Image (cartoon, rainbow, N blue to C red):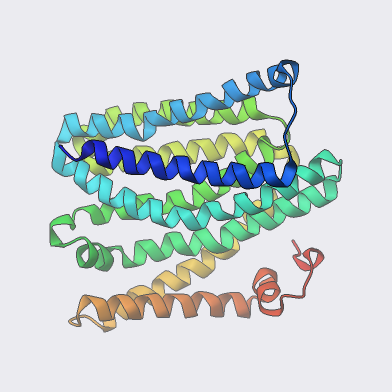
Length: 319
């Protein structure tokens, strides 16, 4: 407790220095930016609308965790937190695409190039599916080996939580495409906010109903419900900017490949029963990766061949 001020100071100073470096480089490149209060005024409304999102999101993150602590105790909160940390680490791979692709999509939409914008949407759907669906099934496949190995036997009950968090990776990726890359870029921030509010409220209600019986798994399940509801609502709101049949076709294809990968991973675990956990985990991961890539190669996946050849343009990423 006596070092708390030092912890806060180090984190705050790091953020401050990072911002100073970023803004100094930006201003040196762009020069001094002239603005007026009239120019700022038109952005206040949309900014306030978007500021509601992190506040409402607390319902299915922080608030639900507090409810879990009151209903089931600190141990269950620990199981939840450890599983959530694993989920957060994996999310880094999921959210990377939006950071890169959103500026390009915004540029094409602003210029009225709808065909190019739709191509980017289709690419994002394919990219999210090809990366997050196997990540989801892979995490489910290694959870029972990974959790006790890296978190310790005491956290074995967190295995179920990790498995429940896994589908959230795919759902969060889809929500990134629908929400950040479509709704926000196409000036539908109100609909984006509404989708988050609906998901948060339903998650909060579900958590209250099942947390007593399911404990930490119930809170994770409510988080999963929130992500699912958000995606369903956004699928409806963004329906004019993507093809639902294309979405289902892509998801179905990579789900089949991922299921085959999961079966291979479970088969390896069965064959290596009695070996140490590190050996089993390594063989599961290697087998899973090779099985998934083989499925993509056999199905002549356009994105895989795009990566292999590197010279193939956007027009070759077919539906």
